[in-house]
Structures are given as C-alpha cells and as structure tokens.
Length: 284
Image 1: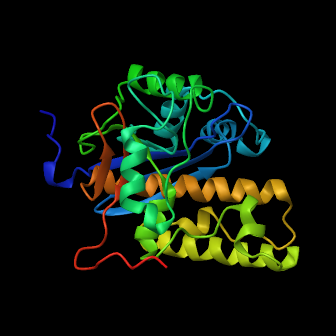
Image 2 (image 1 turned 180 degrees about the horizontal axis):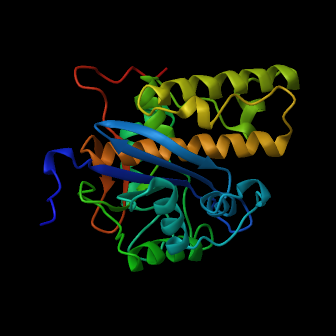
C-alpha cells in the first residue's frame, strides 16, 4: 500500500511576477520573480526585458536582447513557473489596466493623487494611444490564462495594477517621491556635473535595493550595484529591473493582505499600507 504524504511536511509556496511594463512595445520592460516559502519572500530572478526573462527560463538569458517586444502573457507565466518550480499566484504590473477602454485619467489615478499627491506621487495620465492597445493586450492575455484583473481582493491571486512611486515612499517612510529615475537627474540635482549626478543616482538605487532587501531576500545577489562606468542603456536597464522588484514586492504585500486598492470596480491601483503605528511624514 502506498504511503500517503505527510500533510504537515508539504511546503506551501506563493509566487509573484512583477512587471515594470513599458507603455509602448518599442521599449523594454523589467521583469522580476519572487517566491514565498515558510513566510519568507526570496527574489528568484530579475531581467531588463521580456525576451531576457523568457530566455532565462530556457537557460540562455545572456543571448537574448534587451529590447522592446509585445508581451505574451502565457509565455511569461510558463517561464515563471519553470523558474519558480510552481505556478504564479499573482501578477503585479506597473501599467494602467482597466476593464474598459482607457481614454484618460481614471478614478484610480485620481485616488492615488488624493492619497499621495502631497508626497509628489501622482500618476502620469494614461490615454487611448499610450498605453492604449498594449494595456488591453496585457490584461486580456492574463485574463485568458486565468489571471483576471483584481480591484478589491488580491488574496486569491490574479492580476493587479501597481505603482512604484507611492510604494517606495511608504517603504522608505519618505515625505516625497524618491529621486531615482535615470532620465531626471538634471531636475533632481540641477547644476551638478554629470559624473556627480550619476553617483547620486547610484546611491539612490543602492538605498532602494537595501530597503527592498528588508522585505525580500536575495536582492543584492540578483541586482548588484551598477558599476561607475555603466552607459546610459545599462543605467536604464538597472532602473527597470529595480522597478520590477518593487512591483513584485507590492504584489507580495497585496497577496498577503497588506496593500490597499485605490479605484473602483473598473480599475484600481494597489499600494502597500503604511506600517502599523506610524503616521505618514509631512510633505515639504
């Protein structure tokens, strides 16, 4: 007679796929994969493009280009399952998503503006062109694969829209959005030489990585600090991967009931809740 498995020894596992999705197919999108075992989240993989992620699952990621492409939801889910050794529980995407065509600002965008506008974390206004059809393709693709868009309860999995800027101010306990976008260094540090701005940017990335490491193991191993001699493309790829990890962390918080949805029954943006017993800092 076959011996039944010891139920107490069966390890439960939850998997989150985080995507920093570009609003056009011409630009690359960061992808991160995190898994929870025994109450601890670990970063298994992070890549600067869809193609790199798919190739990573096949064991040949360095041969794949870092470029834009139209995302294939089923292919991404299958690749994630191969890497994680189990199915994805939740997909968290930094891109406007909706059950209805997006033609402008949504209640979800306005909800974020009310909650986080004073901390300089309002959303960019989406439209029919950007992200437009690309958003529809992503949402429909994941829905067809069994991951419907969730607006109220993410504990059972599915697909959620997330936004890194307010998530990071929550994580850092910051009064305003963190200055970590590679294309905005002149605005962050006006008058500073290029080399100084790049150094300050690397410091911000290391700070964010260290904050994420308090929530997810393996961040430093999967995303080491960027070398000083990195070029512009390498800096943008690093930023996209960092954002993808933030998306994965938001997904983990939503999956475990520690995130709040801002929006309505058509679209919602999820942000981790402030830590219990603390008040948001006053924005300056």
